[in-house]
Length: 360
Ligand code: KG4
Ligand code: ZN
Figure: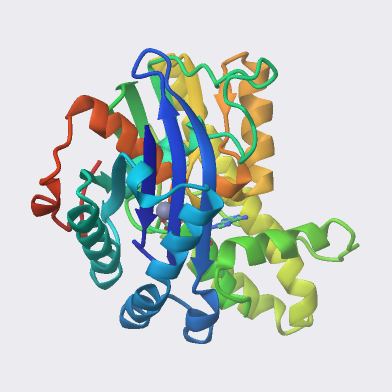
């Protein structure tokens, strides 16, 4: 079936069209188009996302983005079998734009529509191949994901370790007690005077560090790395960054401190994430380990995770880069599984509800 995905939970206006087949036994997806309009330019001067401005931008871009997604997929609306839209968690003013657009299209096109959990959507980013790659090609094999799977979800608002028993069956075994991993990147970046979003900015500065030969060393804490559970805490990291920065600025220029501090921030976050995922893997013995969410775009994290689980010979997956940060292809893929579990009807547009605090 052809599925149109719509995602507007935060500051990306995204639409995608995928072809989904195989059912629960052999699910496979071809991404036909995957569009995302980033609002970074709107929010950058405020250092973070401003919900009302986000909603205004979504309103402006949502229809053109959907139109282009259909054109790139070379499909007409009558060929779409299902619409999947993010219904939460996220910013209410942003979510409402996507949900109401999906409802209106479902009503006008007489198609079923299904509401998707954004975090669950991130999980399914691991099932997707880049545009143009045949999911059945032997070379890549449709990522044979076996259950139970252990998933580390790391985004701007969430940090969770999830045990996935089967499609739609999740058990959260650990979460953050304060800031999310992405939030830690964003907040420490702000303290260092780097631009929003902080994750890519910190990663770029950390890369510069490797070629510098500095006279000082920064050591930051690895919060809760040895705690006897699978929980995280990142709020102490920003305080440690602030104090270390205030100390170093007396002697060194910001352009020297930034790469060194960024390198250590990235290192600290990565080490904690890898250690806790490894600890969970040792206890639950999953058949697959995956990461998902915007922070999964981090090269250092991808490499360290791949190395760790490669060494243990546990199959490990990272989402392809276009599907790490917020996108609509993952929402469409999640919509497929939701549809298989609970067949959708043509009047389903009446039933969709927004839930800004929706849980997995
Ligand atoms: O999943 P996502 O796109 O949106 C949410 O659902 O929150 O995640 C956004 C988060 C932001 O905190 C951003 O700084 C972080 O992902 N991020 C990264 C990188 N790219 C995005 N963090 C570290 N390294 C990156 N390369
Ligand atoms: Zn997200």
